[in-house]
Image (cartoon, rainbow, N blue to C red):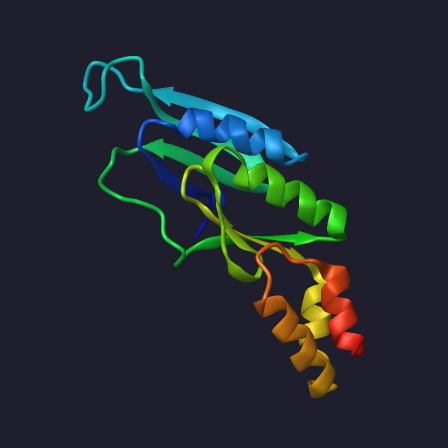
Length: 160
């Protein structure tokens, strides 16, 4: 059996092309793919965008203008592993701008309703440490946050 791979299809209500451009402005390693438009067969008006393909960090996405029937939920989210606080701050700021919503523990929804987890890689190490007392302090600190402040989590881990 052969396959070309797979992509993630994101269902939008008329904003697939706008969303593709937005995500490509947020992430450094991205590119735009094909844009397909409705023809006279419909169901949308001929010439309007059906799908906008784009790739971010090697992951292929297809934005589909499917209409208002389905909405995004937190049941699916994309995790962004960040090497430092500057990356956390960048993604948090960009993805919450223009109507995005902050959530607890590094979670957010962007202006299109897509859920993201903005996670410094060090966080997983701290909350998963074998020293359960330290890990518990780090976890409690994380629970009190929206955007993760890795220095504050580290201080809690160390008992400071």
